[in-house]
Image 1: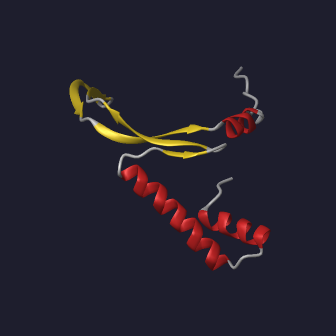
Image 2: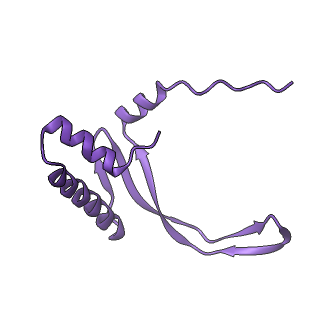
Image 3: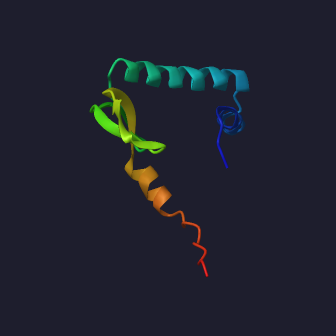
Length: 104
């Protein structure tokens, strides 16, 4: 199952009895502030949730699986990394992975 922004707004609205439009504005503004901070190279730390930060990936040489004899240069670039907080990590660890099917 996927939790969408719309689902999030509906759930928050139901729990807080706030109008969905007001909740949507707050959620959208929150996400924009996080994105703007990351675009400025800042780290975003949300206690008990996690930390978003921008990391730089080094330039490297890749391989095209369709023509492995050719090198493909991959340039240096910035990416967003997320490190879950203690509470989230503990909650996710409780999830049981699906059982693997044995092949004959």
